Picture 1: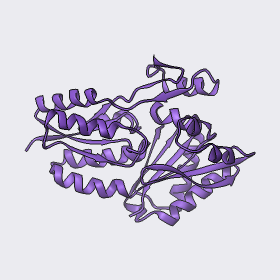
Picture 2: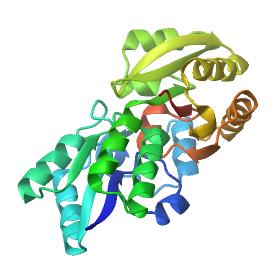
Picture 3: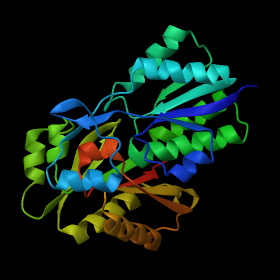
Picture 4: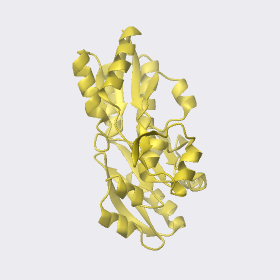
Length: 281
């Protein structure tokens, strides 16, 4: 049986030390400046990236992982005697999924498996990590795919942003939704529905954001004591830690993984975003 490598993209927001310990290959998703798509800003540190956004020096944008990048990755897998399992950013947010399908078709790799996770950020990261753990333990690609389809389908994404302008500019929400979220001291809470971003509700003030996110988790979570919960943040560690503490106090979760929101997702959320990920079934 061939070794399995989990192929994902840089929107997964997994910490580097996690990636290094598992059969995971991360393909870079291009991040550039909206006014100059040829200007690659991926070399900025994550802190520099968010600081530049706050100062209004950059308006970043992203594009999909192209077909040729997947083809090169698949060729490398073949040469190494590996079978690729592709788990990338939701197809509602990028065309990378279509690129992977086309690359598989072009190269006629029958055993490669490509799944639309309908996930993003550390929600995707947790899906990738679960698949990689199963691969490392010797599970078949069929068993991994079956487990991962269910796991990804039931991954909740609950998040808040400092401003909805970045999501509006990237076409992820409407101008009307952005206007409502921008009202004085109103903090929007959003969630994923079938891999797309939808407004959930509005709360007043920072403290109520954490309280409400934990309440939503309480309404939706299943068997928290068996789960690794994810929290990611766009240079807002204080709020992320506050949320983690609230989750620990409310639920006996197995573990909490905290990571930065990388440039791919951060280009659309803007600085200050905080997200919570958990299983609802």
